[in-house]
Length: 389
Ligand code: MLT
Image 1 (cartoon, rainbow, N blue to C red):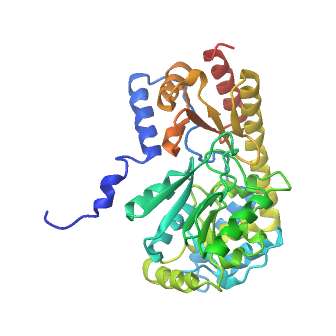
Image 2: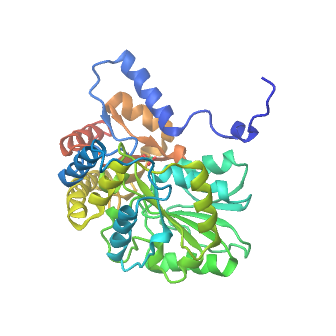
């Protein structure tokens, strides 16, 4: 073929992190078909959807089978009832939104990368370690990326210290994937002040907000004064409501910002909206009873996270997360490299995690709490055994 390709793809790693892990595990399974693998790699939920959500989907499916209630194309920006549900959900955090601020999406991953469609080639600042999609999508777009390093000293929560006054695009994720570290109100305020004073844009990923336990951690960047001038927020029902397989999220772009109009225009051409059945499910999940039911599932995962945290306390291994987060981010023991530790755990304990280097930091490792309690305890036993405790 003689057509031109997007050469930026030459700068992206050949395989997406979680595809590489799947390939390694399936290769291992070919040789060891009976290995009792426990998966704590990709952050994929395991508990079924709450009944209130399933009932809403059943009702919506029935409506689709009747001429009077059948629905064709959904609105590109979401049905009003779903946007109302998001708006009311945000009132729990004293955030006042308008329906025009809200766009219903098929998940956070899509919007967090598609948003680049409406941005020019800005200087992009990304905190690291990081969800690989931010780096990959900006690399695919040929943007110039600056890494803000998270480490033990800054509690994996880099602040806008020493940054110049240029206008930039800043990615923040709190509670963070992969570290579980979370910005406090005061810390997030520093980011908002920096963005407002420099004319920058913050892309705030709140996919894990439903795991927050501490009162000093904001659930939304819009809890911070000034955020409507400088931020957009990408939310997800995947981890909070168990929607990884259903696919629904939302993006909040304050209607006072010019990019709201441009995103609206972009979506009208490139997106046909989220299905009616899914949006009825989302509406149910975000209702007060739905939130209560989803929080029961989250409490289950949190018990797993606490058990993992206790394990690493007992082993004397440094970690973050396990609190306000479904993830445990740990230092690999004995100075091991993260893919070596991945192979070690896979072959010696049949436990799968995610190498820290895949998130941009060598020598670290991520485990998720998205499993059964029994499997989590079994994984802990095996990890203790192979680490000699
Ligand atoms: C993760 O494991 O980091 C997430 O499940 C990935 C995602 O949300 O796309």
